[in-house]
Image 1 (cartoon, one colour):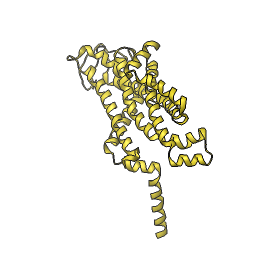
Image 2: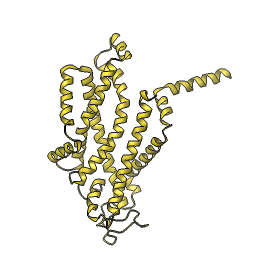
Image 3: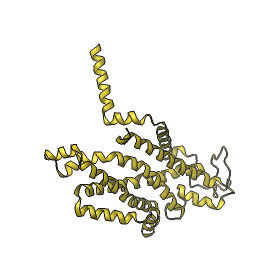
Image 4: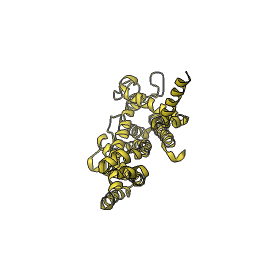
Length: 294
């Protein structure tokens, strides 16, 4: 019996010492981050299931309920065309979250690849990639995005490309720094001494070491991407009417500030809560993944 107990305890200790077990052991103490993660999951599920969670069609006008205040029939009120604001906020989450996650994923993949190549190859390859990154970083992110969308034309797809482009140099610099440090680590030197070279060394031993920083920064960058997409839609370069995108809804409601504040209050709250949840979750992930904080 004692041997069985000891064996079970050893297995449990082994699980805790595994990377995933160690991460969960540290992350579960971050109550604020867990709460933010739950809120974010609820927002994502509500948006993904919009055909079932939204009470009305987001683009169908109701001229009998124009600019109606919050009520049992319309919890968030209606806009200048009688469209239900709650339904538009829910459907708008689909667009805003899609732009945020997809643009950061595209920019992150490109940035990680460039960062790994730059940090591992060094020499003129490193210089070319970093100078390219410097050129992109010389422009404020929103101005670079405006320039790209102005060239490609307004629309959600082009906004995704624009946000992805200005995300690339930041990920490239982050991964390059991690790669330069990991190249000098003992386990990478040991792998190189037994003949591991090139792509195998990068993918098996260096790339996994860069993932914690990339995951944390991605969670924080999605919030920035959502804000940028909302800003582009606000000035007419993003989602086009009658798309229920959060930034476009703010643009539609700005003429009614001080009169019918529900038109800007609820889309603004949706952006605020989503970005705040992403930032709090990112802080918790950073604390749980960063070994230097032990």
